[in-house]
Image (cartoon, rainbow, N blue to C red):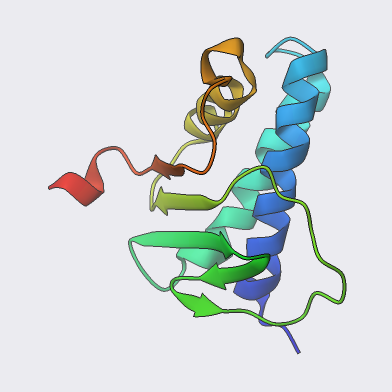
Length: 124
C-alpha cells in the first residue's frame, strides 16, 4: 500500500507533465493552468511534512522519493521530468514559473536534467 507521500510523488510528476501540456496551449493566467499549479502545490505539502525538502527522481521508469524507490504504480508512466528537488516554503508561483519555463521554447534543448526548485538551498 502506498503512503500518502508516495502517492503524492506520482501526482506531482503527473501534474508537472500535464502542466507542461497546458502551458503550451493556454496562457499563464488561464484558470486551467492555475488549477493545475494549485493541485501540484497541494501534492507537494505531504511530501515536505518530514523535512526541509523533497526529491523526486525517475530512474529507468521507477519513481524514487528522497532516494528510495516507491512501489504502487501498476503501469509505466511517461513523465516529462526526470528529477525534481523542492524546498519547504515553495510558493505556487515558483512552481508555475518552473513549469512555464520547461514548456517554453527556451527549454527546447533541455532534456534529462534535474529541475531544482529550492531557492538556492542546495548550494548553501
